[in-house]
Length: 154
Image 1 (cartoon, rainbow, N blue to C red):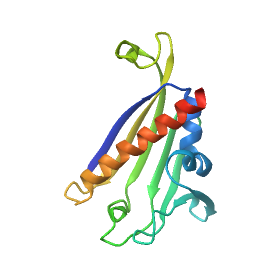
Image 2: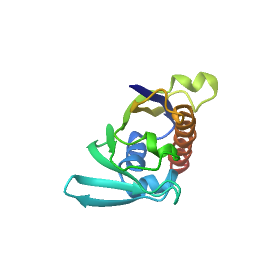
Image 3: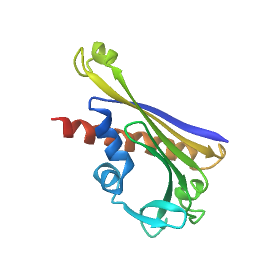
Image 4: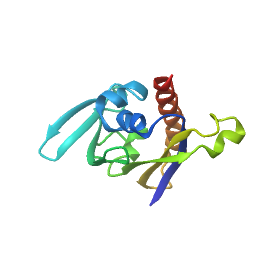
C-alpha cells in the first residue's frame, strides 16, 4: 500500500492549524462545508462533494491538541468517483512548531516560529487510477489550509 505525503510550512501558530484541522467548523473554513456527528463508532466528520460521489465520512481516530489529527475513511463511493479509492484509508496531520529557516527564501521573517503540517494519506492502492489525481488535489487543498491559517494571523 502507498502513502500520499506533503509537508506544508505555515506562517501561523500551531494552534491555528490544529483548529482548522480538528473540527467540522475549521475544515469548513478551508476545504469544504463539513458536519460532525457522534455515532456508536465515535465522532464522524462528513462533507459532500456532490451527487456523483456521495458523502465522504471520516471517523476521527485521534485528536491530540496542537499536535495530531487522524481520520479513517469509512464511507463507500461509486467506482467512477475518486473518493472510491479513499475507503479504508487513513489520513494523518502531524503539526509541529519550528524556527522559520525558510525565511532565507522569502517565506516570512527571521525569528518567526511557523507551524509545519506533515500530511500522510495512507492505505492507497498505488495502481488506483485516482492516485495521482488525489495527490495533486491534496496539494491544492493543503495550500488552501495554509492560506486560511495565514489570513487569520493578519
